[in-house]
Amino acid sequence: MNKTCPSCGFQFVKETGFFYGAMYVSYALTVAEGFIWFLIGYFLLGLSLMTNFLIIAAIALLLSRFNFKISRTIWIYIFYKQH
Image (cartoon, rainbow, N blue to C red; front, side, top):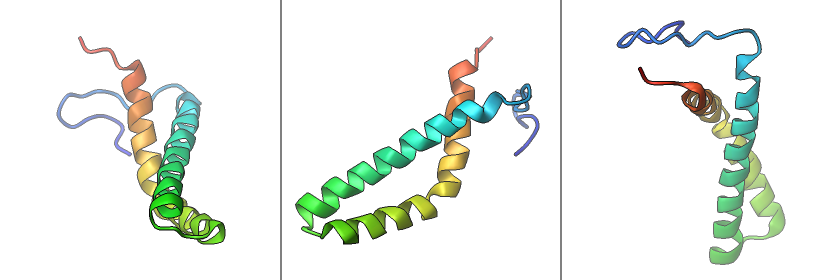
């Protein structure tokens, strides 16, 4: 992760522990993704619970890197004040 934004100079590095809250955002994203897939897989596609579980686990694993980055971005935007 860059220490500062190349275009505006915003400092991404905050105090120690600043991004611990991003874990809650990442958890919420993962739950939302899993819930959406469950609704699609179970009700629309008619997949079994075990199949849905395995697919949700794979989705969570595959999207973990994306969720890590986007949750940190969302967490920064919660505290970002535009001048």
